[in-house]
Length: 222
Image (cartoon, rainbow, N blue to C red):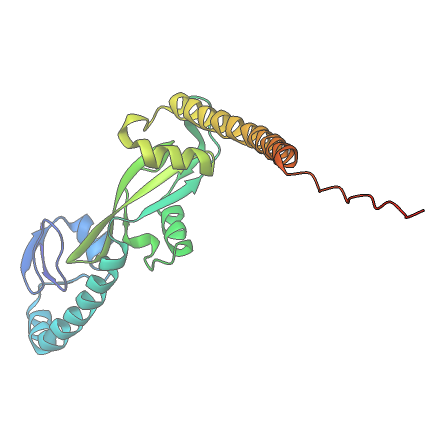
């Protein structure tokens, strides 16, 4: 184990300015190259104390910006259309980059590195995803992975009842489509019926209307 000075809050590890013990590999491969920590040497401790005020001010500014973004993004639903088998298995997967791109298309500003996803998504359905906008600001979005916009709508409306059940979603889409076609087919029939009714009413009005009075014949004197 080696000691490092944290330059920002690290979840389950500590706050900015704390000296903590970590595994050498974690420090070497993540904390140090990402500039999230410094080795806890005397010179680095002195350097940190000199820069503490500036680091804390910068952190506060970035946190405030992240909180402002969080208010717009937290709870958002991002739709991703993907090809998949009848069982719901994707022909490929949804990665952190895909989620960040979907967020960008929806007008949200977060990057791939901020998307907290342990393993790529490989099936259709609804999935909650964490997005760390700042070391102290984490939000949740939901990705709606579907084969079509119609299936995405069904999953959004039915939620957990159909999540992961591609067959049920497809059946719901087919049923909705059939209802729509039936309603469309009934519209011309209703219009035709209304037209006939109007024509019949018009005929009745003509029959009921009083006939024009006949002009009396005038006999010529003769």
